[in-house]
Length: 286
Image 1 (tube, rainbow, N blue to C red):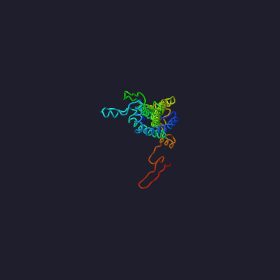
Image 2: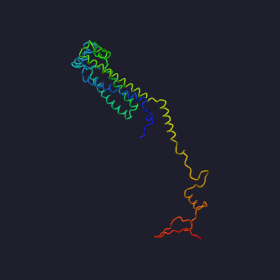
Image 3: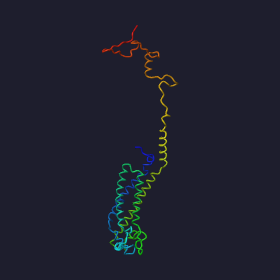
Image 4: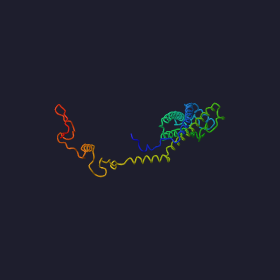
């Protein structure tokens, strides 16, 4: 199957392979940390408790509003920082990032993890983890009496008094999860930039590509314009061509003319085979 020209012209070599290996090594513990932190927080280890703690200090809305809304048949959605969707989303992208990391390692070892594949993969990962940052640091404006226009309190405030003592450890864990999310976005953005740099054509790539194009164009000369080999014996002007049989006759006759056969006279050219018996008749001597 012939590869399209626009695909064959895409660079497949990394300009800084050692940096790629170093980023892979750094990505392994970061991905494991994200999976552990998000997995521990699922399904609701401290999310609702944080919501209630902020309501007690007047930092955000109260989780009891969900109960009141349901009792009064009013549609209501939990704010993003306190919603179950955010917790489940973080677990899903952490598991997905582990799977992608394993695939990237295998593809890099087998030399099929090209810059184009890296660009598409890390662009998707940057978007996924950026959405996670938005969900974790989203506002809570559901209670106009206690608005939270920015990130929730466990990100903007210290994990100490006046926070309840039993939530201090969970507060540090939530801060660590948010920091790991930012670290993953930074890591994937760096890999995306390196992939774009490797895809950008440099002077050496342009010269090699132009040489390939010129070689390909020179090999497309039509066969009508190709010089046909000359017929043997026609060099130096038009004359009778020389064939191997003509050369043999000239050698045997000695005068440059083909021998004339008269019956069984002259040069023996073959055996004369009779009915059931083979005889040989040589030249007649006078």
